[in-house]
Image (cartoon, rainbow, N blue to C red):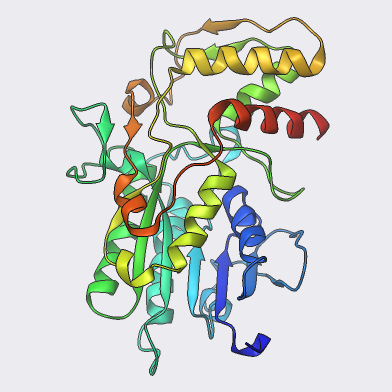
Amino acid sequence: MAATDRPLVVVLGASGFLGSAVVRALAELPVRVRAVARRELEVAGSVEVRRADLARPGALAEAVAGCDAVFPFAAHIRGASGWRIAEGDAVAERIHVGLVRDLVAALRGRGDGPPPVVVFPGSNTQVGKVTADRIDGSEEDRPEGVYDRQKHTAERLLMAATEAGHIRATSLRLPPVFGPPAAGTTDDRGVVSTMIRKALAGEPLTMWHDGTVRRDLLNIYDAARAFVTALDHADELAGRHYLLGTGQAPALGDVFRAISRTVARHTGKEPVPVVSVPPPPHVEGSDFRSVEVDPSAFTAVTGWTCRVLLEEALERTVAALAES
């Protein structure tokens, strides 16, 4: 297939943690890749790079012109709080919901050929409070926090556009994702990498609970591979959300102690302590709830499974962050 005949895949927010990993994975496939980011972007190979402020009127339509598929990873990250968003944050609303509304408008009525594919990064916390510790995606959604409500609204816009036949969208709802960054400009602000950096700095690892809260933690390599895999199953996946995860949820106290030991092996120093501290004011109810993810619905359609287990993933991440 000639290069110009290959499908065009656009990655929005390509300089981010997940976006940059997906760009790297796509670069190995027989597709054309357009990486769009507001910040400077490090890429290898023949990836087309565009720097753009997608909040500017018309910028998103320009970014996705002629595309066959889109990964909308653009996100509003505010300082150390990361994805935690205050009520009434208009900028976050514009990025997380407004850009998806713009995307639907840009892709609607594209004429001949199959509707464009959109693979959206949702969050497994969109479900809100559930009675069971293990979720599989069949639960009724009751999103609580601002971030989850915005993600849920954006997801519903994509599903409505899919039902109308304008696009073929699916949402892959993520657990906490961590791992070595795919680009030098990438900053993973998730809990695992944050604790690794604290341990490398010799600081205690702090928890807002007694350590028994459990989380499914997914390596960035497996997360990126899931999004790329979804392209090959666009018709089967379109119109609903799927959960991603390892299927296991270790206690965070055990994870933090494993981080402490792993960093100690790399540095030759004593393991830093893991301690409980009072929660900060911006804490949410989901911070104290255990979540175990059953990704079998996505696996049944695509064959995807997690390959990098926690111990290996921690070793890789510690090694990478120790050198950065």
